[in-house]
Length: 377
Image (tube, rainbow, N blue to C red):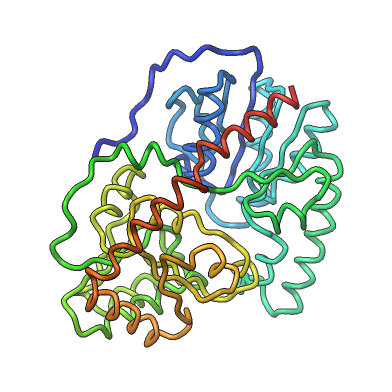
């Protein structure tokens, strides 16, 4: 598959400059770049994206304004927002749309300047903070989460709108200003990728953050226990090198890490895989989330093995194997059940694809985003 190239698309512009900002995410973030920024550019907005990138360029009608990398997390939180603010002011945008909690003060400052501001909260951040072990003991994490929530409330009070990915998070953040824009897949993008034959070796795939709370070790352990000639393919960024080594060394023959690659290539290989996995651990912020990767698996027409959260069962009940994400043996049993009866379970992928086509597409969600922007203008 070819990598996304700089585009010379001639898009009819309207006289509204908008600027998306993230100091955390990378350029090819699915929600920020592929979904929101490209959709707005296609709708005629003059879109700038301030984000971690190597160079200034124009991609698919979006002006990429690069941020320099920082050495550590503290610098990212305390210093990088000032750099982002300087670049943001130079765009002279009318609407600013930011994606990271540490940018809330930046958003408040932009509101004081009379700008329209949207806060895009991809997760319930105050719940997420409670799971960040690097912050120290639980009581300290709860204190930080409480403090953050106060700052978040002040910010939301001043912002024009706050959007998020599930009804529960929208309700939690602001029933009045909240807008639900779900993180559904870009169906046309996946459908345009040529269908190929399945991998010769029965294959499980995972694409996304390779972190402890997403249960990657437990999946790798389960695969190492399976007494079948299968393989697990992993894509994404590892939490740490030590965690990467811990997972991959469980079985060097069955577990293959293929790095971070363009989204089109990930989808190409999803279609070649036999089953997708997303066994997030039962952290507070996972129990009511709807991971983008699961919808991507569904669009690629493959069955899924997922965590047995009640919330997930409501969404994925007809085309998923539900397992205890903390128990590699249970994950192993689900893998073996599928591959021993593969022909019987292929229809689960077909059901998933039809469900996506009817209910869950970015094409429909993008209309809500564009309508929000038009209302703010």
